[in-house]
Structure formats: structure tokens, C-alpha cells
Image 1 (cartoon, rainbow, N blue to C red):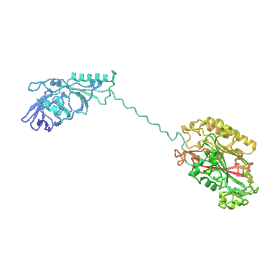
Image 2: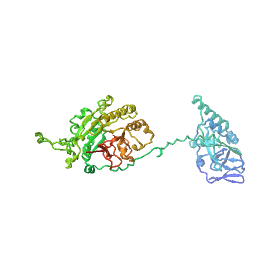
Image 3: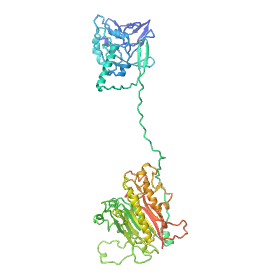
Image 4: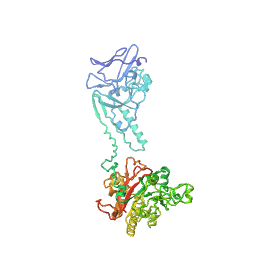
Length: 600
């Protein structure tokens, strides 16, 4: 028993047709010509048995070149590679498994030296093994594992069975085939009688026979289906224009007043996306804009006010907002839905004390109440008047700067209930502040927008122009990006199904312009790229300038200036400049400005 645990030293050598294994102690020899799978010898201290199965991970070529002996020591402590764990056989494996040699079958039936039958024990489950040949060829076999070829967990049993000197493997071809058939029947019964598709094997099975070696390959392994690569949208699919061209200054108001005696009428339009939110988050935004730019008109869209909000003293809207800056306010609130749509207009308050050359902020006669309480700028003094700069209108009749009538209706009940329009009739022109309906995320209002609203608006403005005999101007958030220059990603596939960029909306807008009206900004700056007025806050598109131009000034063609500056325009209201105030925060839109020359 102790001799079994002694390691084998040295390597096998062939001398005169005899295989020699140097052992310590003593020296054991096995005849090379012997075809038996069992070779044993005795010594003074121990009697060792070496099982020589016909196929084994170790092989030593014999003197006879056509015979291949695969030699495996009996005990793993003697240097043998641990056996592979037993695996379940499959129909394909049983078909491709090679049988053991005739010598192994004969040796399994031998008795021990004392004449007693071998006690190798019952048939073990077949084990797959891999043998490496002299030319790095891989052979996979399944062989029965007896007591003489035990695995790591069978060392104790192996020692007991080998005490009699026998214990050779008793696996036979018939036993292997029977075992495979039993496993196949069990697998079929488990699957409900259905034939189970065997798994494909990656390696080939080599058949090693006595004196010859041949191989049979398993069916080709199906390669895994390649994962389809997502198609990357190339930069050539659509434009990506985020660079902003600088706009030249086209008009000098001070020079025009001094040289021509004309007055520059400045209009600001801004979608505030909720007036209460703007006043709460940016309380000085509107007062600062009015004081800095000295606007004559301030037009707001999407105020989202209800009538109760306008007169609520806690909100301080009506009578408070821009009142100290010298503006009169007009509000139009939606009645069809609460907190929806809404427009507002602030008109600079002017005095009519003098017919010509009147100045904003002319002092009125003081009253007793003015000596008590807080003083307010009731005389209409603008922010510039507070700074000591008078808003001199020159020789212009001040009545031309005061609206004659203010209306909040288009004459269509389906439109007027949403508070989308405020119309001011000035003596020299008609102005309409608009918040055009959005077609909706699912384009559910596209038909209403293009077929009803746009058509009725065009008819209304044409009627105004014919009745009053003066040019018309409508402005605000028109919810359409007209041309490729008005969107940063023109050509993107989703634009055709997005509100504001659908072919129907663009065609409807183009139809309106075809009736004698012009886009003021695009006429003045036909080659300006990157000038947008709306950016999605949810996507964070404002900083990279990924926007749309949705805010417009649409004017009658009679308001356009002549190409030659020396030519005298027939009208008294001339379109001079338009630009954006992109640095102004507070909404997902930015303010847009229009400058009109009012002639004396």
C-alpha cells in the first residue's frame, strides 16, 4: 500500500525491444511485443500493477511502428492526468464513439493471478478523454473506467480492487453501446417522445484502432448569427447648421431723425411661455428690455393668463406690469381652456398736448393727490426720460403713434375663444399680435391650423387692408419654420411629421406670402444662417444653437424700402431692420425686433 504512493521517476526508454520504466525501487520492465493490457511485476517491498489500456492520455511508440501503446499508470499519485468527469452520452456521441481494442476486451475477462475472478466492480459511466498525438492531433474517446483507472474520487476503491493484482478496466464495445442506447431512450422519454436534436460538437472525434488511425468529423458547427449593426446616420443625410452669422446694422435711428426728421417705430415680439412664470423667475426682464431699447410696442404671446389673474392684486399684473415704464396694457385671455394660449400688448403712453413735436412725458397739471402718497409716473415717462434722455419724435404727428382702436377678435367664434389675437389700428398701418395654433405633437390640429386658422387669418388681414387703405402687419409666434435656413437640421426625416415643419404648414405659410406679403427678416437678411428664435429646453438645444425660427413679422409689400436709397418711397411706413435678442433669457423663445421708419 505504501509503495503505491511512491512517484515514478524518469522517462520510459526502449532497449532491445523492451520498454523500461525507472522506478525507485526497483526496476520493472514490460515486453514491447506484448499486446496484453496488463503487465505486473513484484519487488521486495511491494507489488505494483500497471494498467495499459489501448487508448490513454500517455502513449509511448513501440518498437513495431504500426502498433500504438497508450500507457497510463494505475494511480494518479504516480503522475497520471486526472480523468475527465463523467458526462451524459447523447445519440450523436454514441454514434461517433470509438470502441475499445480487442486486447482491452480480452483483458477485461481475465482473472487475477490467484485464479479468482476480477473484482473490478460494475460498469462505470463512459468518460470522454482527449489524447494528444505526436503531430498535435486531438482524439476524443469514451471508454469505460474500471477500478484500475479510477478518477480522483475513486482512489480508495482503486487501491482495494488492485490489491489482488488485477483490477483492469472491464469496459467493452457492447457495454458502451448499450449504455448509449439507454441514455438515448431516457432522453427521448424525458422529451415526451420527441426526438431531441443533439448539440453540435466543436472538435472532431478521432478513431484510434490497433495498427491504424482514422478520423471522422462531426457536422460543421453553425456559426452564431452576427448581430446587425445599427446604421449610423451620416452627416450628409441632412444639414447640421448651428453657426450663427453676424447681422449687420441696417438702420440708424438718430441719423434718420436728424437728417430726415423721421421717427423709428420699434416693435418687440416675445413668446414668454407663461407670463406669471416669467415675472416670478425673471422679474426685471420686461422692465429692463423696455428701458434699454425704448420700444414703442411690446407684444407677448402664450401668456397663459386667465381673466382672474389679470385683475388679481397679489399678482400685480394689470396696472403694475410696465406701468412705471410708461406703457398701457391690453390682454386677451383664453376662455375655451384655462391657463392656455393668451396674448398681451403694451403700448407706449403718449401725450397729445401738442399736435407736432410732442415729447413723451409732458407734465400735466399737478393735483392735490400728487402731494400725498407715492408718486407714480402717470405722465407716461419712459425709462429714457428717467435717465434724462427725451424721446423726441421730431416733426412726426404724435397721433400717428397712438392706436385708434384695439380689438381682440377676428370675427370667428372658434378662434376668438382661445385668446390668440390682439389687433391695433394705427393711423398709418394695422398691426395684429398673433399666437398661431400649434398642430400638436400628434398633428391632431394640423387640419384646423392650415385649413381654418390660416385661411381665416389671411381673409381677415386682406379685408383690413382693403377697408382701411393702409398696409397691414402681423407678428408673433407663427409656429412654422418656413425654409431650410429657418431650421438647424433641415432634411431630417422626422421634420416632415413634426409640428411647425410639416409640408402642409409650410405650404400654407407660402400661400399667405403669395397674396402680397413678405417675411420682413428674410427680406432684409436673405443670407443669414443660424438666426433662430426657438430652442428646445428639454433637449438643451439653446447653447449649441440647435433651433428653429418660429417668430416672424409679416408685412405688406408696400412697406418695403426701395433698392436705391435716393428714390423716395411712396408710403409713410417703411420697413428698415429686423433682428433677434438671443441673449435674453426667460423662455424657450427669444425676443425679435422690427424697426419701422415713420415719415413726417
